[in-house]
Every structure is written in C-alpha cells, then in structure tokens.
Image (cartoon, rainbow, N blue to C red):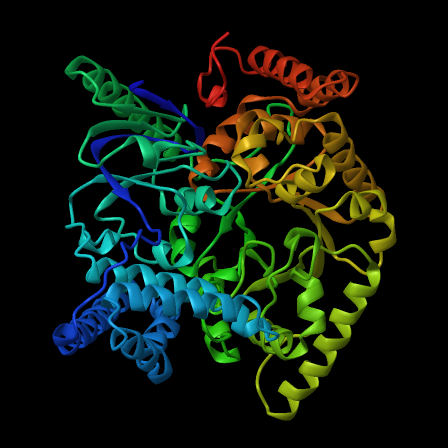
Amino acid sequence: MDRRLVGIPASPGIVVGRVHVLIWEVPDVPQRIIDDDAIAAEIARFHAALEQARARLRTVRARAARHAGEEEARIFDAQLFILEDIELIGRVEGLIRQNLAAESAFEITMLEWRHHFARHASPMMRERVGDITDVEIRVLSLLLDLPDHDPLDLPKGSGVILVTHDLTPSLTVQVDREAVAAIATDAGTRVSHVAILARSLGLPAVVGLRSATGRLRGGEMAILDGTTGTLWINPTDAEIEDFRERSRREAAVGEELAREAGAESVTTDGERITLYANVDIPEDAEAAARSGADGVGLMRTEFLVVGRTTMPDEEEQYRAYRRVLESFGERTVVIRTFDIGGDKLPVGGYPTEANPFLGWRAIRMCLDEPDVFRPQLRALMRAATHGDLRIMLPLIVTVAEVRQTRELMAEEAKDLAARGIPHRLDIPLGVMIETPAAAVAADTFVGEASFFSIGTNDLTQYSLAVDRGNANIADRFTPLHPGVLRLIARTVEVGNANDVGVTVCGEMASEPLMAFALIGLGVRRLSVAPRAVPLVKRLVRGVAAADAASAVEEALRLPTAEDVAIVLERRLRTSCGADPFPYDGLPPR
C-alpha cells in the first residue's frame, strides 16, 4: 500500500497519532433460521439489544450535551423515540416467531420502515430516514456482536486521527476535542461543512481522501498534515521527527502572528482593511474576539437547527445572539438569518429535493415559513439592544425578498412593543451576494440593502456549476476564475458608487493569496476564520493596496484561473519581499 494518501487540505496543522477508523454504515446481515424452542430466547436477546442501544444513546446524548450543548444533543431524541416504538417492536417479534433470527427480523423491519418513510407524503416523515439508519446500525451492531465505533469510546488525551467517510450531524456532535486530534474523511472539499467545522474547532483536517476508510484498519501510526492535505501511514522515526519539527516551527509562527493581534490592519500605503471573524457557534465568540478581529462579519445561525427535531424558540435564539454581542462589546456583529436547506437541514419537516442547492432554501424557505422566520427576527431585534447588531439575508436574488423581510420585521416589532419588550427596529439589513444574478443586478438593491456581503463559496459554486462538496471535481472549484473575480469586481463597483459597504465573508478571504486578490479588487472588509485573522492581518500590513490593484488589473486580462494564480503569486512575493508569512499554503517556486 502506498504510505502516502493525498487529499485536500482543509484545516492547517500537523498531528502525529494513531488512526481511529469510524465505519458508520449498515452491516451485512447473514440470514439465519432458528428452531421453535429458541424463539423465546431470541426475543429476549432482541429486547436486550434494544435496551443496550437505548442506554448507549442516552449516554451519547449526555456526552453531546456536555461537548456541544443541550440544543445540539437533541438530535438523538428522535432515535430514542424509534427504539421505543411499539409497532416496530411488535413487527420484529412477529418475524422472530416465524423462525427468523433477531438480526434478520430487525433488518427486514428497518428496510420496510426506510422504504415507507422515504416515500411518505409528509416531508417530516421523509427526513426520518437518517434517524432510522442510525438506529439500524446501532442495534444490528449489538445483535451481530460487532465493535462499537462511536467516537464516544475514545478516552481523553488519546489524540487520535479520526478517519471516516464523512461526518454526519449525529457524529459531529460527539467529536471530543480532548480525544480527537485531527480529522480525515473520504468525502468533502475545502469549503464543505466538515472542513469549515474542523477549522472552527481548531482541528487539523484533510478531506477528499476518497478511499482512506477502505485502506486503513485502525491503530496504524500516521501523520496528518492539514496544510498540504496528506496522510502518511506508518511513518519512519526520521519522518515523524521531521514532521514534529515542522509542527514546532508552525507553532512558533502562530505565536509570532498572535502577538500582532492588537496591531492596526492597514496596508503599507495607508488603506484601512477591516478584518472581521466568522463565528459558527456562540462558543467561538470569545476566541474570535481575542484574535484581533474588528467584529463578526458572519455569524452562522444554522447550529440552532441542524440535526434537531424541533426548531429553537425565540428565547433560546435571543440568548445565543446576545452572548456573541456581549463578547464583542461595541464592535460590529453581523448575524445571518437561517441558511437552512441544501446540506444544512433540521431533522424533520423539510423536503428532500433532487437539487437542493437550487431549491427551497435560505431566504426562500424563511419567507415561505413565517412561523420559522418570525421568532428569529424577534430574537434578533431584542438582541440588538445589547450591541452593534446587523442582519444579513442569505441567497437574495431579488429586492422583493428584502422588502418582504422588512415588512415582517415591522410587524414583529409592533408585537414586541405591545408586550413591552425592549428591542430595536433600526437595524442595518444587508444582503448576501451569492449568485451571478445578484452580482450583476447589485444596483437593484441600492436603497434597500444597508450593505453587501459576498459569499464566495456559493458565488463560485453557482458561477462555475461546480458542487463545492464534490471531491471528484474539487480542482475545478476556484474563486480565482476570471468570471468569479469579475462578479466580485462588479459588486464592489456598485457598492463604492452608492456608498454601500462591501464585505467578503467566504472562505476565500481566509487565504493570503485570495485576500491579496480581494484587496486588489477594492474590497476593504474581509471576514475570515478566527484562526486566520492574525495571518491575514500580517498580509495586509505587508502589502500596498496599489500593488494589489495593479496585480489584479493584470490578472483580469488572463484567460484561466491557473494563469491568474501564477500572476497573483508572483506579484504577492514581490510586494511582501522576505516576509514568509503571507505565502502560507502556496507551492514553492
């Protein structure tokens, strides 16, 4: 076996540790017939497995609540309900009485359930298929005496490299940062949500390995290099020492960059670049505030809904938003309304679509489901009394969507006033520019939108017709494509002409070469991963905005993303001279 597995760098850092392979899939079940006199014992064995699975899930739920919070842990409630379903239990017992072994009877029953729920008319019922599969894996693993692979089994301090096909919501909430040192997945790209999660948790990660789970058994010593996207299996002592030395150098670099957290983010020719941080969960806010960020340019709110069986109420949302605002004091906090749909769905209540990224998601879903949207708007208006809050609307393609949102806010403000609850209605309302249509027609939002925020992940995906989560075409996903750069330039041009602030909040802004390009395009507000704030600040302080603009002007005349990257890299190296930090992630030349 080739000792070097190459994937996609997702979160920087180097980890040396043992591999822990997590296979979370329905096991093969050998068909087995039992004698009549074994039926009673087989039913008892089935009930014992159910009880063990319930106990296991209750333990997992409690652990998830400690790691990720009570709201995140509720993802397991639906699975506990399934394990207690009288109809399901009765069906399995009936098949056992027909001389089927418990595992065969349970497999048949769950197959029937999956088929039934997948075809159900109710979207809520269709979304139960994932829970049914999780329950099936747990119970069959117990009945077949298979190893239990939950991350829960890992003792604190074990420092393993978790290798799995992908991280589902039910697996994600179990990841213990004190036990898992790094993540490697077969699936995913640098902008897929497992990669964003890893960066948020500060865990080195490699994604898009394709076949790692099939090639590893678990227990192997390995080196994961999240900067280059490689996983080295069974390294020699010399290789381990080389990587550890690199890790020490990277840690020293991180410490040096962190010392600049309080420095002004100003280019060498005097252009002020506002650096915000992206926040995925409220727990990230304090670390983001210490990073030297000027505020929050994107607070995602999907953590409140993904993987849960119920939507969060107004009070729960208000507490979460207030916590982040108070962490940043008087600094700006931009909170995005629910961007649910696509690959971010709550458990139940929402339809599975053939092409979800072009379907019923984000602002479309919120406006069509006012019972979901109104509590969020009320919570945001209440939280706005605690700081400089601004609201950002995702996937906007027409000004009508902005106007509808304003109407809903006005209605909910009246309700809050009638109840005597402190709130603010005069909140800046911005739009995300994530589609070619929104970028080309950016001028139509002038007068309605207080600011623009360019989401480069989706803008690239929709412009290039490249699924950002598909590892097979990850090399085609590039924000440096001339078409994407021109759409960004168009948005900045409209914003500057009409005094509408423009921020870039996609992952593009977190990479020095990309940030150099954005500065050259005229972007003066960047929102990046908290860990990237010191690095991007160092870049800003080491370049001239005029040099970046000249480099972009040259690059925009070129026909391919590869040509653009070569020119930008050459100009960046010329601009920064001997300073090595802005070249993070660039290939040696």
